[in-house]
Image (cartoon, rainbow, N blue to C red; front, side, top):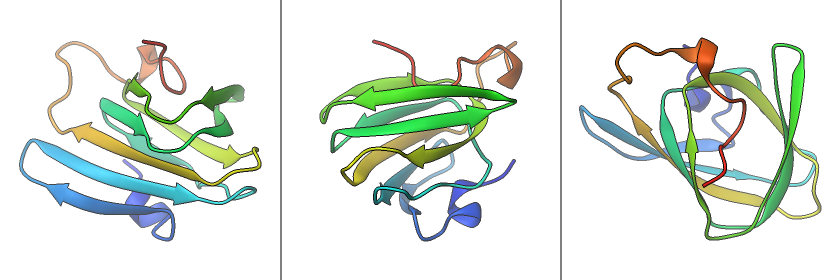
Length: 114
């Protein structure tokens, strides 16, 4: 697993953690991009509106979200780039216990619609 706090320490920081959950804060500016990293099953909460492109395995998915959204993010490896004109500010509530019987292979790239 490529921990985003390790791959991109200037963009991700741990706000809180225990044995079952980790809460990350993510902030970037237009044009910023992340390195390839992993997320376990997570809930993403957008604190600002943003536009970005998520890339993994040769696929690119555009993501355009308003502030105040909560979205499911299935376990996945990806990298992202802020392609908008505003900074990104979001929280990731990462679950440390994986869903039984699933893995990265069946995950949707990027956040899923509510």
